[in-house]
Length: 319
Length: 276
Image 1 (cartoon, rainbow over the protein chains, first blue to last red):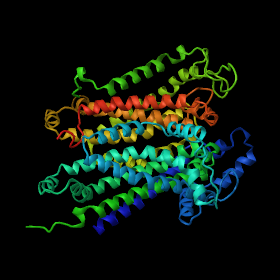
Image 2: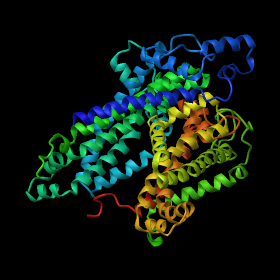
Image 3: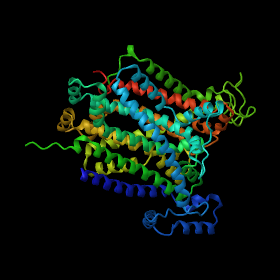
């Protein structure tokens, strides 16, 4: 098992290196000159030369990639083109904000969704099961901004319960922070709960059809015990994968939600950088998003291995 | 595909089909049905709905309903084109990779894995940063990113088919590559690919709308639903329904596609343990 986990770690590191190459090429696939494209029509020969120098365009792409990658490894994300500030200083606080919002949503969404999924699997075919399924189908296809606007219209404009803009600043109290971020959190919860719930239900049901569950039922164990003690541990691995998949979705989906509620997170940071075509900022933000994605998937793989009852208690080989 | 019997179409599928038919009509004839042009300023910003303007006016005083009708062509057209292109790239390459095997197959599969390990939205933002947002770039980016998913599915499907007896027999008969692709793999992979087409369209549609909502998708002066939500979003703070019309239309189309795809899939696969 330790070997399997080490293998996943190695795979994660390799993926990260390849992803960094892809992000780097992606930002530099411009036909022609990046400097000319950034400056557009205001380009004078002097400003062009200065920008080229700054972007290091005199050296080849491989050398530039290596310089960029080694910078990242040393914690140096480069300088913003727009205001000459170090990217890291601008980026990390925003990243913290995004993680805080995603974490707030995850803390609510994951237990809720897994609980709902397990209960609807246990109560298969009941009214509760069918109702949960219909609601899940409905919310899973609604775009974030539709849900967000509905919540703003009712919760904040008509009933005046919560603020419509998620204004946060450093040093604000927890209560104020929670009040500001509850609406965006709700949108994220709504778009992720349905998916996790349906997949949890399916995986638990797949386990429930196994012979050992039948045995447990025939032994006369109460249904709750069969589900919680016999079925759920075996369904945990796939469920964790589903949860991780949805949490990574949460971190990318946060881009839209941050825009709806004007939240100061990494998503809006990246969108702003893209519209200003600030190459180092986009590279850094994309790299952070991709890294979170890769690391989350790796952790999910490892957790699924560590939690798999079959791998934890290997069967003694009979020969 | 074993199509479910037509006499027993579930209500949800009827609903979904109606929505899709409506979307198709809007896509084909929307601009012709619009009473006003998409750029015509007709009154006060955010004017209330009236007989002349059933959905009211937007933040610049343009007729909301006309803009929705004009926007249909852009919103649906861009995503439909992108998905068609992504299938034209992904399906043949996926089939070929599975049929030929060897190192091209391995390289293709690994490359797709790496592209897929970056969130799609992030990859798209990177490309849009480099190339700027224009219609061809938008369609090309979505098509290429999406084709990785299509490639993966097509490859897995074809891998399952080439080991079947009938494919084996065809190979022993000495059939060429083209025959194998056209007569053995494609017909058998078609039903799941059709369902995938629906889901991919749904995804691309939401994706285009999302990018436009972020201001990085379809650019003005063209009306498109995602951009319209962004434009009149402030209206919601005054308790106006204006941004809910385009947002609701987007939601309705996605629900329609999902309902139809769900129904098409239900004919082939039952959820495990469903009918015990």
